[in-house]
Length: 142
Image: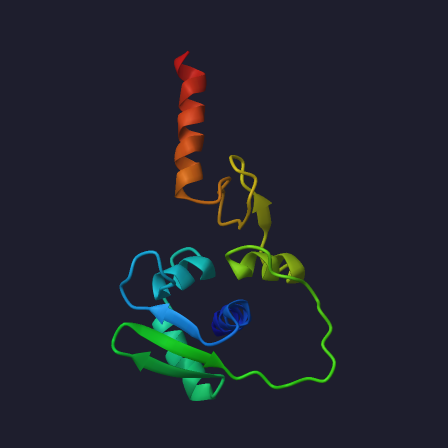
């Protein structure tokens, strides 16, 4: 899981063109809970993973005024860069798993957005799942 966490941080650093800010207990911001949701169903490793990555020297982690973690990923410079795939979605792991085939990627039955399939899920999240229940209940109530 640390590999995926490091990959997410690298994508976010490139996306924001600078250090990544992971907020502590703030709505509508990038938090550890958001990263845990991206990593998978029932995973709670973000805070411990950040500390492990810092000890390995892969990232530099700094807490700023108890509001957020400021993270800089240590990336070595390369002369030639070949693009293997591009990240188009908010959750960068969908494109990562689609590229390497480690997990199954499905399209949502409601909105059509791609998501990482967990067990027998057919929707990408809670909102689409509620809509799917409404649609299936309306079939039988008529």
